[in-house]
Length: 265
Ligand code: C5P
Image 1: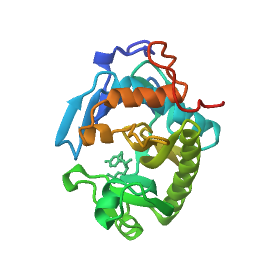
Image 2 (image 1 turned 180 degrees about the vertical axis):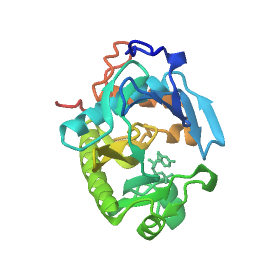
Image 3 (image 1 turned 120 degrees about the vertical axis):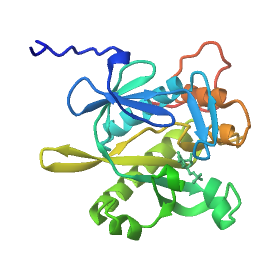
């Protein structure tokens, strides 16, 4: 006999897990075409060679990513984000992930500095977009548009859409962070295909948080991102809290007042 109704609330241990990544888990959502994105406290770097659990990181990333995706949605940048559900989870649209990590750089740092010998902190002549093939076994190798189209990971039209959206996201994020005294050095985003009947749209997916961005304090140059973990600088959680506080997300009474300018909304 068929169960007479579909419960809208599915207890966490009964939910079907669709995918588990290093920092997030995707569960089946309450409606067809939706998923629940759960933020874990795990921090990993160098393709999982380094791992730690940072209590509370998932909660902060959930909140910061919600804030950014809500604003992008409001600006007309299509995203997978629907709403935050609780401290660690958000409801998202199910999309077909394009297997690319799209990195946008404004200032040289990290692998660009290593690869091309450009000192970290050098302002780039213009924003640069790079593509990496999402494949842990291969260490996410950098690829060109030629590889992407030849191997069918995305069409030339998809790439045009991805690049146009990446530039819009960069413009928005650069301004957002500049307004709270933070320099957006670079970031990684992912995209998915959202099917509505026969129509397909490319939408921003995954997350935007200090795990996936390089954020430097405008005046001191302090790193407020995952490089604190990668480079053993300590104070990772405090840095993420500082980003959230400056964005006006945490109404934290316990800490000192933010030193940078506050966001005018
Ligand atoms: O390491 P690299 O300099 O190439 O990283 C560029 C940007 O992409 C950084 O902001 C980094 O946090 C982000 N990134 C990421 N996930 C990866 C690789 C890079 O979020 N797997």
